[in-house]
Image (cartoon, rainbow, N blue to C red):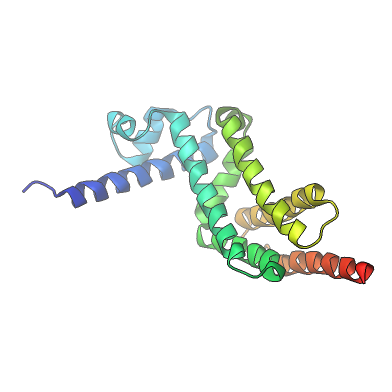
Length: 200
């Protein structure tokens, strides 16, 4: 009996997910430059031709992986945007921790992949665009908190959140992510309180 359209769509989505998982594993383990399309297809258990029916090539796979990471980032911002301005930074930090914890395998491999020079070169302007989007949102959050230096504070906050998530992803059994998150939240809350005291 022929498959229905729904079954075909489900099969296509499953194959695409397997290809992305395989590519991420190989990019992290062997390096983006040394991972061939043929090897990615073999890792996913599909024919090379089937890979090309889903992605134009290795660079398209890489871009799709990073689009998935930006979907997680967007989810953490959505959590923060749902909070009141005073609670926004705390919601962002805690939300980021929960998302990395929920997708731990993905983020462990993603962090191992994204620092490779060949990956940064392949992503090019897309990586700069994603970074600018994140920094722009963080800038808005710290401005809401009364930051006198929103650009520097946005970069500092980005480094703190990304850094703690990376350390946790690479060593989840030992890194005290919840305690560190609360320290980050306390740090930014203290800065806001000091500014309020100075202005009163």
